[in-house]
Each structure stands twice: as C-alpha cells, then as structure tokens.
Length: 413
Image 1 (spheres, helix red, strand yellow):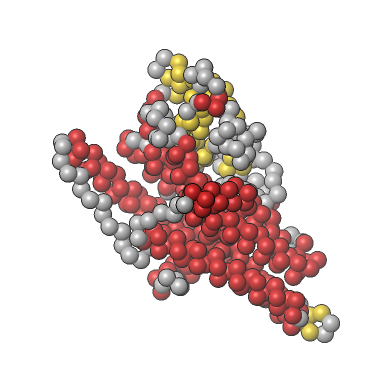
Image 2 (cartoon, rainbow, N blue to C red):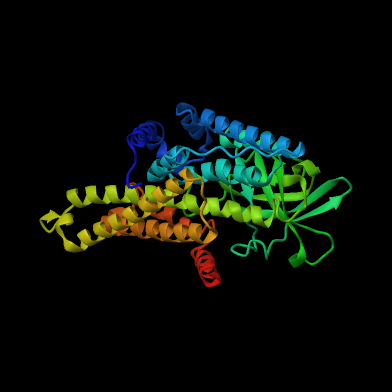
C-alpha cells in the first residue's frame, strides 16, 4: 500500500468536512474552556455510522467465540476464524479519523483512543464472553467513557515494579485500594479498568498483577477534577482514588487470578495497541504543521521576498516532508498488517512509536521556529500542536522505555 484508495479518500474528505464544521469553530472552547470532548465525538460516530459498524463487528466476534466455546464443550472441532478482507478496511476507517482529528485537536484522539481503544481492548483481550458483552459494546461506540488506570504517583515508567495499588480477598469479594494518576478520561469515566497487585501477605515484588472493571459511582471510588497540563487540553486527565472499593469476582477480568489473564500480559498487549496508534496521531500533527508552514512560507515576506525563498526555510520544509513520508509509510504498514490478520511484536510497536513521536515533536517545534514570534503565540495553531506533540514521547511508554524494548528484542535474537 502506497496511497489511500478512492474509497478511503472519500471517507477522509467527509471526516474533514465534519471537523471543519463541528470542531474547528469551537477549538478555543475545547482547548481553553471546560467542555469535555465526548458529545462531539459521539456525534462523529453517529454521523459516520461508526457506532453501528463497531457493534456489528463485535457481534460477529462474540458469535464466533461462542461457537468455538460450544464446539470445545461438545468435543468437536472448533470452527476456523473467518478470514479478514484484504483491503484493511476496518483498520483504515479507524485510523483516518485519528489522523484528521490530530490535525486540529489531538487531545480528542487521546480521549477517544483510551476509551474505545485501551479500555475496551483490556476487557476484550482477556475477559470472559459475559464480561465482553457486558462492557465492550458501550465502550466501542463511546456510549460509555472508559479509563485505563495503571499509572501511579510513584510508578511512571516502572509501572509494575513500583505499583502499590492492591486487591485483597475478603470472603467472596475483593477489596481494592490505591491511587492512580495521569489517567485519561479519569474525571468523567463511566467504566474503569483498575490494574493492581493481589495482596496475599507476600512481598509486593512477588504479587500477581490483576485487572478489575469498576463503574463510576461505586462506593469508595473518587474521581478528581481535570488536571491542568502543558498540552492535550481537550483530553481530560485526572486522578482516581480507591478507598476499600468492594467488587465481586465477576469484576476480575477473565474471572481468574491466572497471571496470563487480565494481568501483566494483558497490560502489555494493551500497551502494544496504544503504541501503534501513536503513528497515526503523529501523522496528523505532521501534516497540519507542514501545511501551515508551507502557506506561511509563501505569504510571510522578509527582506523583500517570501521567506520560502531562503534556503534555511526550505531545509525545514524538506525535513518536514521527509518525516511525513516516513510516518505515513508506517501507518500504511499498520493497515496492511491488519488486513493480513497480523499484529506487531512489542519491539516493532515500540520502534514505530519511538520514531513517530520524535518526528512529530521535531516537526512541530520546527514549525514554531519557522513562524518566528508568531509561532509562539496561541492564535497561530503551531503553538498548540507543539505542546500537544510532546506528550507522544511520554505516554504509552517514554522514548527511553521504547529504546529498551527494541534493544532487548534485538539482543534476544
């Protein structure tokens, strides 16, 4: 794949029209006000039938899983998994809105991705069929807002080693205790995946990692107001406090304490999905910065001629275009892998995330430099994009963590 198909271009054009009508005129409201992004995202889903398509895909998935479970119970040969179509259609219909939204309001993509992506994926990957049917459809359609709670005040990159949040058995229930921070959608989340350690009186380093689903309003759960931060203002971020929150075993993802269920491996799989999605976000930021910079280089006159005629400005534009081409190719590779029914390794997803995040940040900062003093002013949109781009190098694992994962994989070969 080297370019979008005609059908995909039509979708992209339609999404751009929606954004121009519904989001660009309200950008200050989302970026500098107190308006959560969820209603406009739900409207995007409804207008493009993304909610119906998501429910249809989920229904087919569950029907297949039930058929497999039924065959296994009867001692029969399970049915083969249906082959995917070869055009990567489902993947592209997910990535195109991400790219286009990131040209204007990257924070919306973070809010959307954590809800319909990470939170639903954590349940969909390791949950029981009943758990999937209970929570996943509403998350996939944005009818419910999801939060994936792993980061703690003292953990950061050492998410598992420094984790202090716990689950303790008490009769037929679990008692959850601990705090989480920097949680996307935390202030407004309806459905929270809470990742913690099973406290059996043993040392923290020896404890199993478990994941639980907790609903908004559960006694003992407190959700903070949105935190103030450098960028991604349209993505509400907050803290979560669990003070002896009681849940039944039906809330334990996978309904088993097996470490391969909703625990460490489930979290790693979710990280992989999040990292591969960063490339699409980076592409949107890069495309917008490049378009804005080219237009400005043509219009801005200094020393009697447009600044685009100066070689140092041309160098900046050329480097932006190289970054755009490289990141676009990574996105196209994601579409092709999806069409082939394949997923990336952790190292591949880390490499993709590392390069894309760095490229987006460098391009956005160069755009600010190209705009000069105007680029430092919020009325010129490159200022916002530069602030938004930086977090791509931090969340879903910092650049340093990505490098470690890539190198360890290479050294194991």
